[in-house]
Image 1 (cartoon, rainbow over the protein chains, first blue to last red):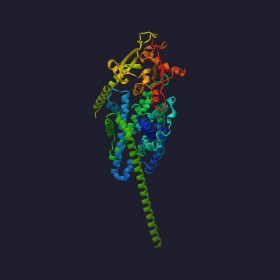
Image 2 (cartoon, rainbow over the protein chains, first blue to last red):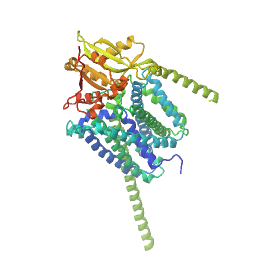
Image 3 (cartoon, one colour):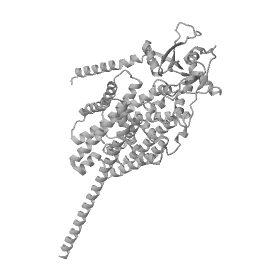
Image 4 (cartoon, each protein chain N blue to C red):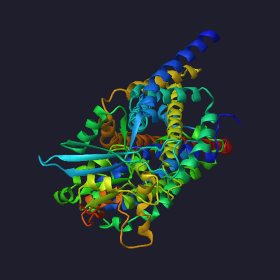
Length: 385
Length: 202
């Protein structure tokens, strides 16, 4: 078995990294400000749909064992189509991670490094990620398996330590600003399940491909539970997030944790954990982008690409003039990008590939049956003779 | 790339980052900061704010444990709370830091006028903690700050931190924090509340 293959837990943690990294940015604020008191209901509703989508993706990928979406694109549309799909996915991964890096580093700058230029804060993270990426893929994934549970436990800790400040009545009115807003417009919240994008690239990386169903379902269910806990914590503590500052809402929630006068100011510990999770997220993004790039170009050595993708992320992260622009991307562009590329394009390719495969099987069956008939006729003639 | 060039490159990178982050380190260094323990907000005659800052005054190591620290209170008049903070930063050698601010005192006159603007300013300040208490003083806020002389507690910072603890066993004083106050302020079905206290002006 190749050493670069990953196990079930590692794959689940890999998908979960995406939601944890996104949740420390403005994603929870966007959900709360859009759906108000119906945020939890919306998250539950969207989670059910996301689980359904993940199951559909599993069913569609099942017919193509050990193939990712790039291989499938090549099979149905040739090299040109493969290259187009590859470039779209690379652009999606790099663009979203760059602008999220910008938002995250802006928060760090506001909180801890007010006199340091944002370039240096971002560069420090990107350099760390580039160095980590020089190790093999397993190193990144194993580090992730170590760090991510700490972040997940951290969220539970945040939930239970703030429970005395909860006002559960904030879930009323239960439909928030109406059923249409919660259930129809609320579908854009599917973008919270950004980890689905990585499911398309998992099959060739798995040690045991039969576990893919388990990985898909568990990772999306745990993502949903994480999201529900995040939104519940924020909704029950704060009166919506429409009027409060630009720093991460989860960070603001951590400032409420206090155990008398002895145990205070735990937010620094949380920020440290989130920095590590964010570095893991960037590592995964670079790894997957490099993998796609290698497939579409056919290069043998991926290592020189690490710095190029690192610099690309840093360069794109520098484009927004301020935090408002990068947060605007998160709020107004990212959800549609995710839905368009990951859900519409990705599932579209898989459906088309499955139909093409069925047609191919049907044709080959027809050919086989025709051959059988011919053989029977021939054998019959022979027998008659 | 030879090993020598690689090491030189790493050395240069480290130097660049040290110089880039040193400015933030020095600006947040304890030697360059003045910690505000309490903020008092009064109204002035020309419809501006009279903002008083109560600074921490650490007891020198050589002084006895029973020696009390004298309060250091600076007052400025400004059109807003942010301007007041900037003004004090302008003339004081050290930068104001509100991360240890335990109490925000509003005079009754200001409270009757409405304190939403000041609360928004404070809650958006990353240094102010949501656990800081809000007091509405029937007397002048500056006068109130001057009068606080805890008899049992030597350190004023400690007194400010624990004085609302009594809310756990008596009903005379609520634990009214700025976090709860802000949440109630923007909630359509809630009413914000603060601690009401005063000293008699002679």
